[in-house]
Length: 603
Image (cartoon, rainbow, N blue to C red; front, side, top):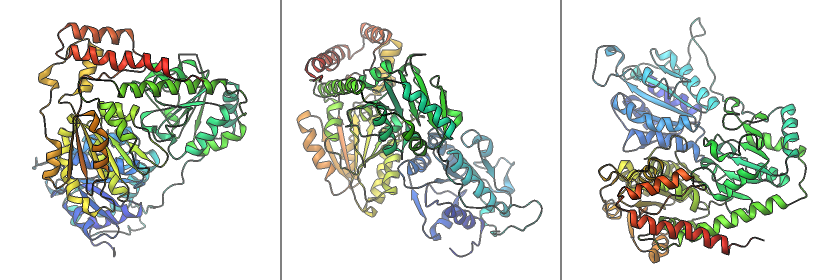
């Protein structure tokens, strides 16, 4: 781009200096100047989504899938900005750097009750609390953009710039004067955080070396540290559980990796935490206290890039503030090699039992199509370079438990906000970040009806531009908000409320075909493999409409007495699915558990 002529062009140019390349959004007069500037800016791409919420989600996911160092969305004034909030909160809670460009009422009309006039700086002061400023004068552009980008990257959070529409057309001031009251800021990113200090490293090594049964909890902060984390685990003879956002940090096939933890976790992870004497937390703040070791059971060390997040979930003895990979590499030479492999033998038994149990759950003869079978048949066929996006709900459960992620694969979701409606936006962002790689999205019918059916229009708009057209959406359709239904049963001991829980039936495969995409209906277990083979090898994006059984129970790795009693009470109260739940639940949980324990090899 030549020297910017107006403020909008200057904003886009300065964001480009920080590495912003893709802008997700939807046009409107409040942000029209920025959209026009993007049209002529070299190396930039504007992605028109169907709803501003998707723009926020996608800006966050673009960073998660490694497409950009800095996510960016551009939305118009008033309702457009309001719509973007949910996706931006996803970025804030999952600590992803995103800059939101918010169109605004013309400055001459502010305070006059103009159409779509909202106090955006107040509205965004929580989600963009670290930096949210309104442009009032063209010479501010340089320092406002620089500070917004630097803050987002340094604090790994959301920042926002409120841009009155008339100012976007004003003449740019790319070089503010060297005078009182002006700033000449830098667009050079700050150096990354390195390893923790040597004193803390030595203290952590003392704690870890003293342990005989070491457990590791790895989260999103361990991304990029796989080799170092594996080396540390091998040196300590440790087992490792993975928080949901850390699913791809370690290979699910490793015998000492116990898989997911928490309500959607494995029994192997439960045993790992219940029996360890030492805990190493790497880049995780998994919030379920009951799934950590019991209080005072284990000595604990935590590694996190943000010291404010240390010691919040478990009583840690040493907190190392630093980059996970650099800190683990500094720690490794001070760790003692474990000669006794007994602890890992125990971990291997737990993981084999869990895998056997999981296979038998998927093969259970349920009344309808078993969703776990559908996802496991997909898992066996995943391309080696696939990028997976999961939505919130039962799809999250099957993603966490039944999808085996191997080295080279990427996967993510709305991990802390746990917002429905993130699956398709995440999948879109992954595809725009890496158009040469295949994408698979796991979405429940509730989330699909929220915004998924609309964002398939975005898929239809862009797919011919992608180097690899494979973009497969699994819709787990059971005509029910089933995750909430199970929470009602297990937490409240009440039968579900059909008027609130049941969803209208939608022909998702036929909708895909209307859009020129590939549609596949799946209702029989023996067709799961062939349907996946067809969908994953289609010459265009594909939708698999899987009509799954809503009565397949979501069983925590450790079922409490209150959960069991509450579910039983819900059946006594006249749950319409009572007989199916009892029959399927016995087959899928009790029966599968018993068979797996009896048949799993223990040595």
